[in-house]
Image (tube, rainbow, N blue to C red; front, side, top):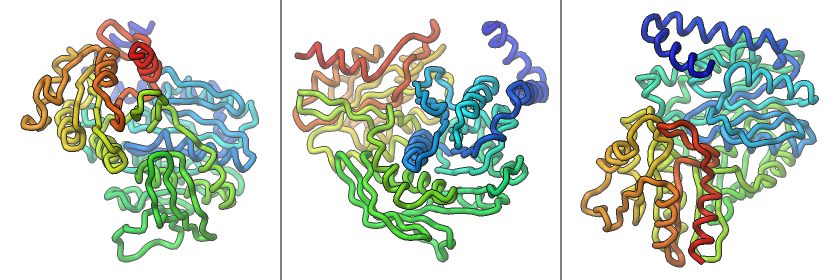
Length: 444
């Protein structure tokens, strides 16, 4: 059946794009109906944007749990249905409509008060979220990604905008206003702000250059970035609090502000927001440190977009005393235009680069690598001179660890916490952290 779907989908899409949309719409309607529209029984928060969605979802989940609530959540890396929590191994951020509605039904049956759904542009465009009655819509940011599917940034933005456009028209739950939460620091803020909502909350960092700041704005000041933690003061319309995040990077302050804004809009006390953010020690595959005895830092991160690369490198460069050795690739059958841009950004910040595979799918990984390489600075990076081409990812990681010295950072990008890699022969088991740990054992 799965093979038949892979054969029929491109045929339908090519012959009759309208039929392809109807096909997805009917699947969404069937899934919601089959499971009895379970989202009507929960408070549903949808988080969309290019980067930060998974981290925002996990931050918000920890805040709600700190408040004593039972929480359901579906993200790229993890799934909660209350007390049951497990890794998402599907390689899909927003699941198929049947799987997603089934999970929300489990959340409702398990007496969850909230459902947090990481909501992608693909899912919105393909009606996977039809019949999910969102109460809060959160916008993190909009940058270059998925242009292989959406073709233009405008269409990509419009797809994400569906979450906000449909918000006020979805089923209303007693005493629960429809709420939009918007990143004021993003250029696309005005686009998402145009849609109707019962109430709107905004978030920003103190250097935001706007003539007027809306009343319902949460903002951060006195940001202090470190290797193991980020500290700042969170200001809300109801007071201020000192926040300690066990996650590095200014971009994680934005993520914390998004989660705090959603929680504040839901009436969560400031002390619980503070406790919840402090309780989150790590998001799998997001700025995840791998402990070792070699005297080096090893970080796994899911960054795979130009903006994601820029933010990760900008966060780490000031706190690394030695070299940054970056290991990365780019996904096959995805937006090819971003590949040289990834190379360009990495070559600006990294001292050594090892190009390798990352979900090549049906594409030749060596071709993908060459397209990334086109963006590298040829004066700084030459093969075997600060640049290594090692297609096999475990071998690439082993090489990075071999050349790393005390004070260096080995930065493994793009795979994050995924548990499989998609190759021409299909999905094969792959775990970045386990690969690193095995390589470290071999070095002893």
